[in-house]
Image: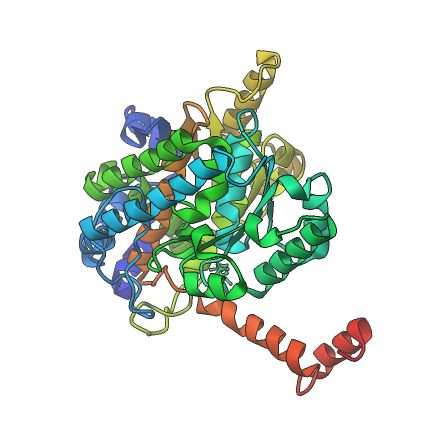
Length: 500
Ligand code: F6P
């Protein structure tokens, strides 16, 4: 993307949000998209005709249409690793060969689930899912969002190498009635393998005669799982071209498919497929992920917003900010373009957030009166996830909408301490309900938004070399002790670990 495109947008003197509404009675309608059981309201952002046409031209110049086709047809979109990114094939979208391959592997997933339900593993009550990053965040989010009432098994996800996480998860589990799913795309991640080994020991201590028989592997490298000791019949492979943070749709979704049932898993995939069709085919100005990317780019590139905040006004979606942090920051937190040149501008903003209404009483002060401009995203559901007094849900939604209104309108006071400048942008995503289908569509929306951001910035969103150095140094320290490190690191290691 040439700097002159950005320069023009950076120089553009946008109007205030209030005046945008005053000038256009149809603004809400124009900037609201209803799709897949979700209402995407982008009207409280500064997008206007000038910005929309500027970003649309930029999308054309960046080849967004061609890049989308490349994504959906299995062409190489991850040039640094020479790979396609085939997560959409997992939900039946795109390249026929990849879709057929994904289907075959899903059938294998389903067969194992059927076998577990039919008693092939004995009486099973618990599922201990061990993975980290993309091998944990999706299942964790989905079980928390959708498995509160209907989960058929007690599913726990353990990611952290801190043994306290495993201790807490296994505390109330009966090892005899537990399936351990070791989820790792590469099957080399040290935290996951250590947790898996400790889970095996926990089973042995608990008197399980053949713990291996209760272990399942979810991986793109079956041979590594076999070498680790898991029998081929209990390995659920997935396509290597599915990135870790895009992998909840394939066998990494094992605890979701098992915990919520196959029908729910299929609904999740179908919800995502609806979003795939929309992203692939809807014109730019009606395209929810693309327009959302335009807002991200406007604030991060043209208004120097370094963060964006996401607040779930629904307990069921409380883990969404965690999930989005990996999706957005691991994908687009880069300082180099896809062709290897310095990016020369900001990449992904920092994604952070929390839940409403809790966050209102903690961090919203800064959102309303701080000196940072932070675009806010509200996510809510029309339907509550509980049977308590409807007053709860009403209060929740009223608070959500009130915050968006307050950020936008502000309130003048001559006393500066009490003045709200307003004109602070927000987007609101209102789900009909939190169901497998709407959550599938929601996650796919964020995936495609991240992709559109990457294309317009010229970033490859599918690699993550930035995580390697720290892993390598940890390995070196583990193998050789604090040799050759800086004095601070050496002193810390010696103080905490002594002679390792
Ligand atoms: O270190 C980052 C990362 O590679 C993520 O991209 C990935 O989701 C996570 O680690 C876990 O990797 P794996 O699934 O291979 O264990």
